[in-house]
Length: 240
Length: 66
Image (cartoon, rainbow over all chains, first blue to last red; front, side, top):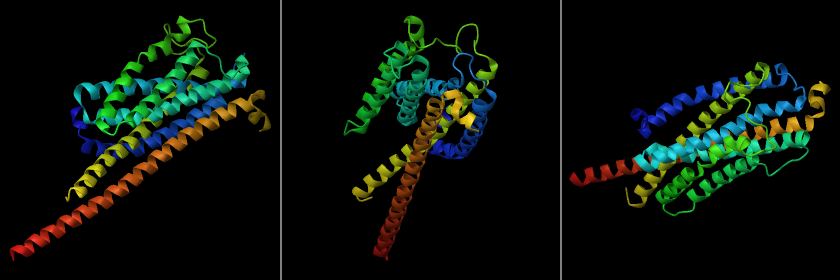
């Protein structure tokens, strides 16, 4: 892995991988969306409204996945002072926040016709809202210091502390008697969802993941280039 | 066609979910790409200036020697 730790080498690799990620993402979304609308059947109870699942569930999974990635990267940055870890954590935050927002918003649009309400202070919904605020707090804290290194350190600590929320989200539907339904894909004994619905869901989930990698590469490249710009500006100020 | 768009009466919930997801993901992607382009342009310009300065300094010091 240390071969990729060098930012200059990483920039080269990222630029080469990026168009492939773009192509795979577009392809997967094409297949996933087609299946979500045309091959997946309506639910016997929820009718066509169940199609919201194919964006809602991947968005929620990615909201949690991005946070886990951000927490791991923050830990690596704090412990080993890895030059890319801080950059990766910082680049992940807005993507994770966007996914979490989408899971809350599409969940609301699904809740209205199925539960009869846009929002309820249920354990799953509340812990997801806290996840969203953790992302916002992380991004705000990063920009709150004049010294960039201090901002990075403070936000990395916040990311680690906030990781406690991840198991709470996952098990909220088991620990509390909530309105939100329990897991039907990632659970003991295998998925309890019909393959006709499972496949479009999984393909959409992979599409969301490759989209994340794509945007992550773009944002890391931007961040690393911005660092180089900062160094050049400093040199200019100090008379080269 | 109309039947497809009505989504069994749930069109008002299904379509906004997909449209919002598409819009949020597209905006995030395009702002990220644009920001990368802008930063790369700034880097190329600064790098060009720095290289030109270095050359000028070198020529000046060469001139001193001669």
